[in-house]
Image (cartoon, rainbow, N blue to C red; front, side, top):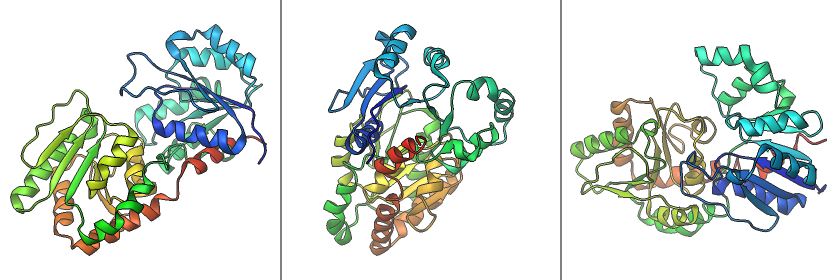
Length: 352
């Protein structure tokens, strides 16, 4: 494999799945990765990355435009990846190196035909092309957005997001025999407690379904944030967990649900599909396009529609154990279409 010496990430909020891609860059290409990351109040989760073999993290609060430029001058990276347009300091640095180093930007915006989308097309020269040579997108909706803002097909790469394959696939392999015998009657949500995540919608739909069908199904909600979630005898609320903790916790779960009303992608869909959980998600979730097939490995419902989510939950509760297991197996198999390897190789495909 050809060596790719240095890669610099100008990043917002690092998560474990981001690092899983970096590890492939180090392992398969012999790269050294330097990642500047947000460590201030813009962070939405408590996760803090740590240096490891070939990967060095730099706190954004300790970096100025001048020191970022100095890092680029020192490392002479083969490629710069920037997580988007949200950091003006990053953009200022990129203007100084554009044309000398390939610059890839993440872009998970979805094309929805809104006024905001149409304005993005008009201003794309100054907001995208001025800074970025390539856009890295996760889904077909984001690909459509990238095309509309003027990027040629050979300037758009896919598979931007991936779950961490070092944690979740082994959950399936270690629990599938047990689940074939007795499938867990647990639906789980993992994410920020924010209005756009649709948590209260899920709680309402679940409570309605439980009133209609008296059974042993439970709901587990994991995370933290501003939305208050009401627990009861059938609903358990747990604090934020690391990827490793989730890998242990989800062994006892049956189904994963992401009921968002806004969700450009949703890495958790991939993570829990890897772990062999059938997935329920709203039709707004970008990852649903690539990782969920209705009636095959999960169900897709109309975003914001409590009655439609209740219908799906009732379907799950009425499904025979064998059907739930079949969907779990299908979810794990289907998850293999994306991996940290696929993401890393996609990123470096821009290098000739």
